Amino acid sequence: MKVWLKFAWWSVIACLCSSALASDLAILQNGNSIRHDHRRDMGAMTRLYLGTDSDSFIDVPTKEIDHFEKDTSPAPLPAASSSASPGPGVPSPAPVKSLPALNTPPPVAARTRAAPKQLLSTQQLSDVINSSSDLHHLDPDLVNSVIHAESGFNQHARSPKGAQGLMQLMPGTASALGVDNAYDAQANVEGGTKYLRELLERYNFDLVKALAAYNAGPQRVEKYHGVPPYYETQAYIARIIKDFNRKKLAQQKAAAAAKKVAAGKPPSHHPVAAKQASIATPGQATAR
View 1: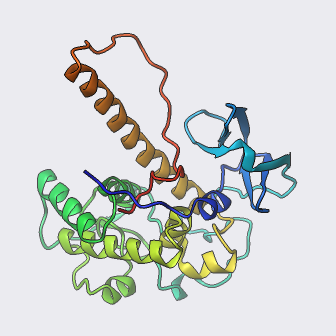
View 2: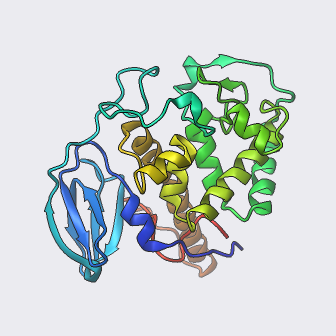
């Protein structure tokens, strides 16, 4: 049974960025704002949809929303190519090579291959993720989602910028974490999990800021006081959160079905509208 720690609720939702199509701002009582495409009033909670679809959203207590207004700031544009600056349409605050941080790699198919020290089987890799997550008090589903976004579970992965292995560690970051060979799957996962935990602690368990720093570097998070205005970083965060939410929703459904079976009730065969788990509800954190 996992023991959940609570995230800093307001710091998470204040920093969460939406897709480039979002056009409204929810102004919170504490002065922070959340950009969103559309919303739905559900009484005590208001659901803010981050894109035009219904897959990515967060639920915010209605009483904590002061008012809504149109977002007049220009939305970030997607990068033209994988070699473009991390901030398309926005001057980069510093050359990427000067940042000792992780960078999101391009699609797996575009990466070059390098022989890892040891290829782990699916079960072995699962065991490594679980043990590393337990050691650093993280939800293994979160670590799985980060690996999925970073490398697609490709142990050979290497980006043109030099990020290596499953969790795409840059050489300088890997060295600082004590990872001698980033292509050693076990060492890579242990180092990347440790780094993710350090970022969560650095940002008071604000998952959104931690993921932004993992992708764009802590310097840029501090420069912009939150998620940088980079499409790549915003899409990276949304992808991980969506994948993490999907896992939690599946677990909730499985637990509910098991409970019905235990109570002697046959599982329902009627289709049920899928609902995505809220990412920032207190008590539903990724650290434990």
